[in-house]
Length: 251
Ligand code: IYR
Image (cartoon, rainbow, N blue to C red; front, side, top):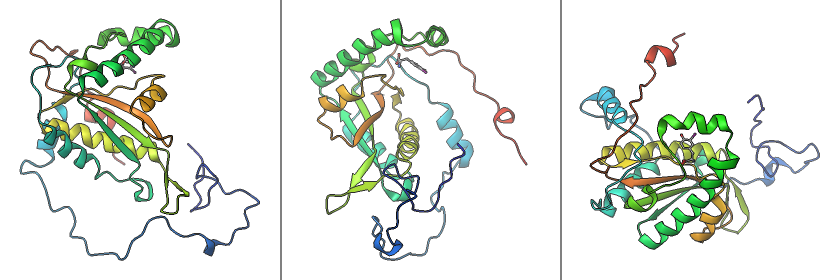
């Protein structure tokens, strides 16, 4: 985006030194405690089928909007997938993510009501008509049965800042990018577990959902993923993916 990123010089947003900041450099202490660096043997855990096998797995993922309310994956599968997500790289190793897993039917119902109320206004008024036109091939609308049918909802929050042991605020650099990368890993892990999911961005619902779950102010909702098994009568749009030669340019 053309913005210079100069070392560890930041304002409250973390990206610019105030011109009048005369604080000596040695008065800054790192937030991250690292005792030592250790030898690393490189990527030693690989798939038997190599990257082709991983492609097959990733390519098998589709956004699923209808879920079996009867087939319930064990919570351990979800936990293992979130553990995988938590291995994502993050700005200055701040790990700025929170994953809220909802299985309680009453909370799911409440979440559905919050989202459907907002989405009704989103579709009717807030979204540009070009946007709603662009969505018609996907057959989406403000009615979202997947929010109550899916056995789990994973609400992914980005922590826009954290806290030091002394209670002061800690910078969470690139928190949104970090949490988005973690979510990509989560999607792959869910796929590897044989689970289906949908990435949703509930427009205008962040505050209400944060309050419903009693999450602190430094957490902002980034994404909401229904997770479960596709319903027997599930259909998905017959989409094509771009070919490698359209997306990769070798120099
Ligand atoms: N958030 C709305 C609308 C929506 C937007 C996009 I971009 C999509 O790819 C799909 C849906 C909804 O969930 O219906």
